[in-house]
Image 1 (cartoon, rainbow, N blue to C red):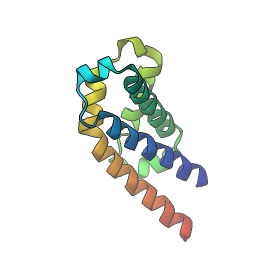
Image 2: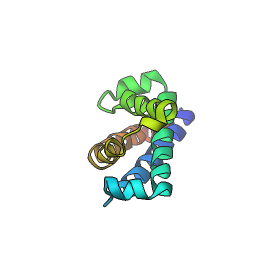
Image 3: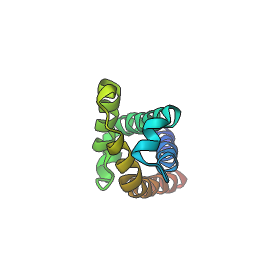
Length: 117
């Protein structure tokens, strides 16, 4: 259980970073700011790796969280980084990440409540 708590904390941290990095950004601004773009890529990578490491029973308990999509994006970044579309990263960060983050916070609350029992 402690492992899952740590992994979920990593996911939340990465998701918060993604939201921050994409807030107010445009495709052009990300394309021009290599450090910001690479920080975004790293955060998506961490998020996807941690999502893939979670226990399957926990992921199954929360099917509303897009665990597989997070892992798939991580795999795409790691294995095909030269073909990553900045517009997809930006749209994912701005449009999808806030609800993903909210759902993962529910998982964190469940884990904390379960640990206290």
